[in-house]
Length: 227
Image 1 (cartoon, helix red, strand yellow):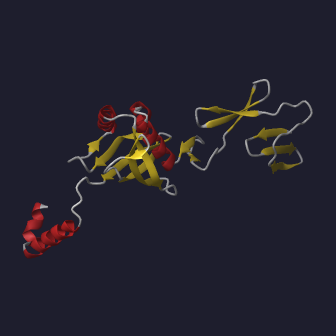
Image 2: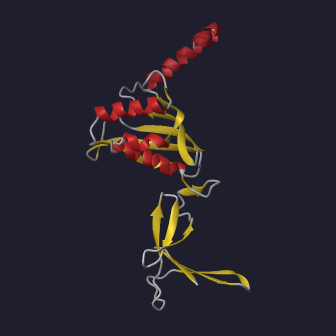
Image 3: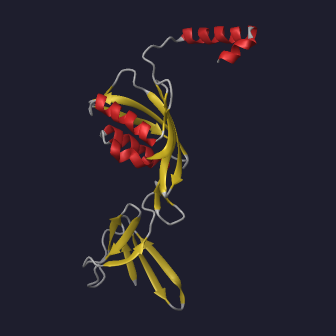
């Protein structure tokens, strides 16, 4: 008999040569089985759980999905979900630990911050930008995620704002979109775009400007070549 204990349930696998394994799962607070020391889990490399008996001796490795935020790749290693990658990304920026987000970003990632005239291309250039950002701000200024999508494994939308010591920072609301891929067993960001709340809000004047530009394009179609 083999017993596995988790924080929410105990699973007993009964094996014999005459029948297929029987799985019995029940939720209990504690289990006593004679003098047998119940095994516990030991986390290894974020991708494996190993069963360890009471004496600390390693038993056979068991790969499990610990939460719904992880999946398995073809090699049975745990791969973080897209939403988990983004939470770790924002956490690293908030901690001013840019090195911790290095391998969350793909080597050929393209990142667009619409405040800047051109995108940042490649992991190195993106990391340099975030190092400049963290060096120019205080840890008291924090990204706060208001909402993010969790259903798609290849793309994530995030709504966020900035706070200074727990208070909303002026003109800091933003939304971002990210695309992700599993590369060499790790889910990484391959594309990102940030759109930040403008400090100047022209309101209805924006509609008037759009109307004027579209009228010009209708009257002089050749102007579209300059767009």
